Image (tube, rainbow, N blue to C red):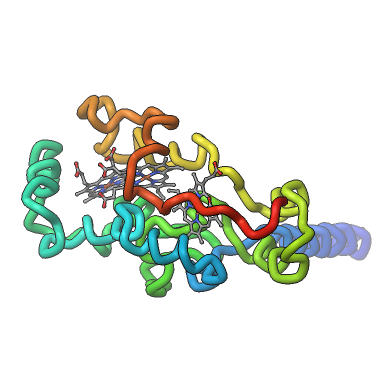
Amino acid sequence: MLGKLSFTWLGMLVMVLAWATFSQAEAPQFVGNEGCNCHKTELKDWSESTHGLALDQLFASKRSRKQNKAMKDLGLDYKKDYDQDEKCLECHTTGFNQPGGYSLQNTKEDLKGVGCESCHGAGSKYRVLHKEKDETFTKEEAAALGEVYPPTEEMCRKCHDNEKSVFNSKSDPKYGFDFKARLEEKKSWHKKYELLFKH
Ligand code: HEC
Ligand code: HEC
Ligand code: HEC
């Protein structure tokens, strides 16, 4: 009886472990912007963009007067640094607390700010496909490996006009999010370039 019972438990344990390993192997991980650096022009534009500089907002010394005022209006302490505050890091870094992403323990330079993967999806898998089949991969193949292209409104709304922060339209209508209009806003991501190969 005891033997049979522990055998059942053992079987279940093996199954759980197998599932855990399998699902871990399945999920693409964040690699950081350096992993996307074949796209040199996008990378350069991005590094000077609002999203590229988004982590700055969490440092008192780097905020503008206007931004300090915005914080004050929403009841935040503008004299304080918020770079250790998980509640802020979620939207001002790349892949926060997700596999390979930014965290209080993983402060890799190229995960700071709203990086490529925040809009295009965690890159560990589709990056390999890009390399191997540069000219010939299809959109569908890349999407199956986690690539989001073109970026969707849903991706943006993980951060924009989201209840997880006070920077939303309930606090102030100016933080509302009109996807189409916002995509057009200059300097928020990178210019659009012709890709060498069609996918
Ligand atoms: C749910 C995502 C999210 C969280 C969490 C978040 N932010 Fe932001 N933050 C944003 C977005 C999106 C914007 C840009 C809003 C816009 O311009 O429409 C922004 C803008 C800002 C700005 C500039 C505001 C302005 O009007 O210029 C500051 C400063 C800022 N955040 C600081 C913080 C601090 C400090 C925290 C933590 C207390 C925090 N954020 C948490 C998403 C977030
Ligand atoms: C805030 C969101 C956002 C971020 C961050 C972002 N992109 Fe994009 N990216 C877009 C959008 C939107 C498009 C245009 C999609 C379309 O064709 O309609 C795009 C298009 C592209 C394209 C296709 C060619 C082109 O220029 O249009 C490449 C390549 C690309 N992004 C790479 C990158 C890389 C590399 C980074 C990081 C350095 C990055 N992106 C960061 C939103 C983003
Ligand atoms: C991981 C969170 C995150 C994602 C995803 C994200 N954003 Fe942002 N976005 C921010 C933060 C934070 C800011 C404010 C940064 C700052 O003021 O320095 C911002 C700023 C902007 C601004 C500039 C606002 C201004 O007043 O200068 C625009 C436009 C914008 N985002 C559009 C988009 C679009 C379009 C998408 C999706 C394709 C997107 N964002 C995806 C977090 C995000």
